[in-house]
Image (tube, rainbow, N blue to C red; front, side, top):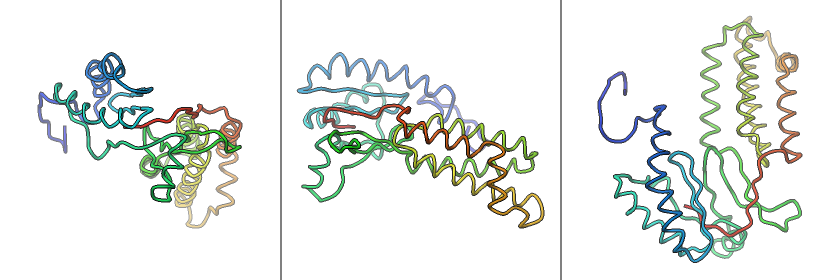
Length: 255
């Protein structure tokens, strides 16, 4: 269904449909996963790995020649099943312990990043600067989308009783923190919580006489509803390293 009109099609899966990820997972298991592990991986010169979730995937190679060859053979393989990859979302980049030094030599900048499952992955180092670490932060695209989704929800539910509204807000934040609260992403979730506070201040201030709620009163209200306590608990857990590990020890090439 698109713009209220139903159109039948015997190709592809409905965009945003509940069955789409399931069908994509089944289809790509045979057309991509088995082909990669049973055939292509055995022809690589170095280490190689594939990470896939539904129709999103990243393929890692130790050598550039394997990554370049895979990029060409992937089109041929998927074409046999009537599939195509999106050129705008597909790229071959250098990523790993040596990517930073090579990027500085080539153009004096930083190595490229890639987005996967709502996170921007980038090259970095451990605290002592000795070991390579792949770090993650909420991708800019997902961050903006989540902010506007919350704004629209809050606008539509601003007339709820304050207690009920804040309980729903805390529940939404808990879900956001549960997914995006990973190691190295404390700034990402802090920015998100701050933007939510700004929206709450705006809409709570419109429920009564204009100017009845200043920023200090809004913060007191949030403290009573354990909003700030929840945010601080998540950030402390991340800083202590209880999030998911982002380490990677080999030089990899990502599709």
